[in-house]
Length: 179
Image (cartoon, rainbow, N blue to C red):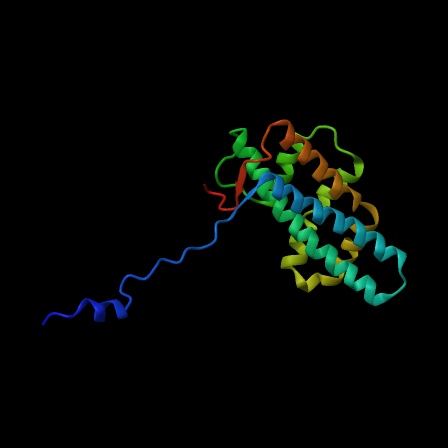
């Protein structure tokens, strides 16, 4: 028995393939996202200490924690991109510690706030993964906000300068790190 083509077409036997979104950003866009996160960390840290309102303080802490995570994600992607550009990426290290060490190797003249902020980036992992010690992490977050929030902007500035100097602003970073 032969089926009419019009009947076969109704079954949609050749569906169009749906694709996942592409996970790439221009370096300039990645840096813009990092700058936005750095400025929110700085501004919400300042706001936290200017108010006595406990609700506003909690909101500021929440925003800083979220933006710290965003900053760290962009930082990791950017550091891996830079390591790939200078052919020093080993193809499998994508930890925050690896990226912090990479930054230290690339940026010689770091400001004090910048150095301390970088050391405190590991707090992001603690906040994200260790809710049992939430109170301790919140105290560390408040200390970061009080003492080193400006360091986020300094890290951003050094990375932007490095990317501009090397002509990488229009290149793409791929968060599929194995490619």
